[in-house]
Image (cartoon, rainbow, N blue to C red; front, top):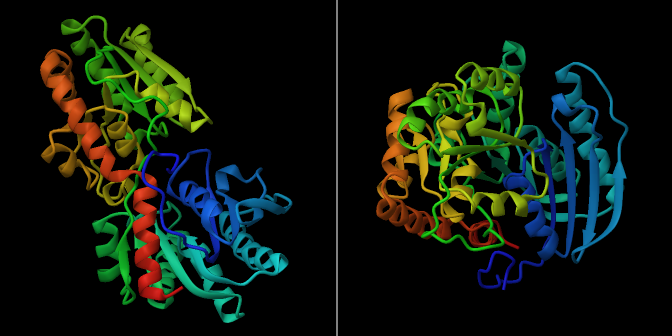
Length: 391
């Protein structure tokens, strides 16, 4: 059995690279690295910090049959964002050469990392290059020059890589219609691991939860503004916030102004993801009230937290922003709301105020979440990739 409880997957003994940019958040590229590390004959994992984490070094790790045999960390440097991007591209090449391993497959999470794979292909170190497109937005960077370079790079990579993995149909469409990709594109949706303890749909906690980065686009401010209305009907309701971010101070101030600070608990970032999943099982409803902005990454992406809410047995209250919102609503595993205080408050009161309805939605959430277990997703992804590109 796999660690998520699914049946053991087929042997995919290949030699592979993966390169990505990372934050403190746990996401698809981290999970895929864990997946390959356990299954590939050799696996080289290259990690670069995003610009706001420039004090962390770029690293490369070589695994042979699941065992770490070598690790290199480059000195961290400071500089303009474009300089850091060039540094990351060069380090990808240097790291790969230093490891002295050839690979059948290079997975680059974003166009810059995939470009590194394409250069390694030219050098004869990599046979096939996959672009793992985990996000897209017309306005990816506030700096217009860097934003233009971002889109130009995506055009180049999309038209010359061997395959694209897109996390949503909207991203797939963007790469076809905007970037002109002609290579095969397969959908690799966000997923989740099973929580360490199975949720019990019959238990009610009167606890809401918000998981993820705290910035204005994620809509946590709407939750805080709705709490006074919710408490009029359900006085004992509490909201748990797992995560941190640039908007934290503003939200604490807002909670104090509305005198709901006793109904909301900010517990910060939890580095142990099993603990995150365990915490979710002790809540009732997962919150995803994204601000409806046309340029938001959430419009095109597939947020992991929705799948994590589902597998933890939490009905999801979500604005009609991410693509997956429609599926959640259609399966009665959650509710789509308008980005309005009254709409959010009414949805929460409706669910928490009806024990039978809440229990039904929790069961539906678990059922839908079972379709998005990580090992199931990556087993299918690797089978399709090998079938199309060859082993």
